Length: 188
Image 1 (cartoon, one colour):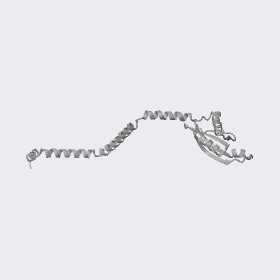
Image 2 (tube, one colour; image 1 turned 90 degrees about the vertical axis):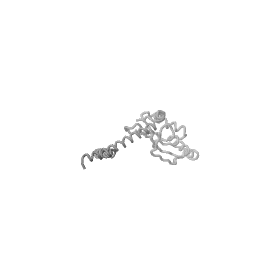
Image 3 (cartoon, rainbow, N blue to C red; image 1 turned 30 degrees about the vertical axis):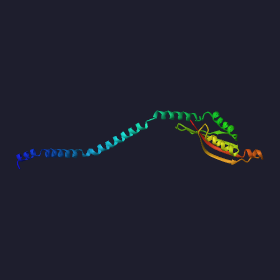
Image 4 (cartoon, rainbow, N blue to C red; image 1 turned 45 degrees about the vertical axis):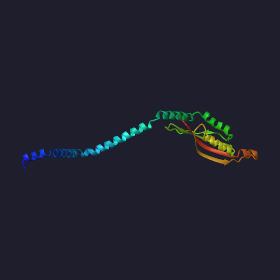
């Protein structure tokens, strides 16, 4: 086979020659870029995940201004319900008001403890309260605490039958003694 025979064969089958050259070029490019395939695939996956996240954010942003306004209103309502530990008279007045509403008798002092100083936005202000009354009155007092103006968490409670020296109707009216330790949510 001479050079003239090869040239004639190439001219006779130009499509085969072009396909062969393209195949060789692709094989060379594939060999040199094989290392970049995994890096490119990783980058593609990262960008796809970022695009999906953006699409989800756009989809979830409908009604966002209304939701922000609602959260701000709820925050203002919550802040209105917070106790201020430094206002001792106002804090104790809350319990005296509950006493009048539920017809229980506060036995002993209502004591406000020292709130723990933390870096948090909200703190629990501890109180120790003892009340005396009939069982329905004591239960009503507890319900008013839980559903009252301030957010309440009971840390411990003891309910006993009061053993006074009174007899008859007076002891029947005041027959339960509740000693309760609780925390009201407050601002530092």
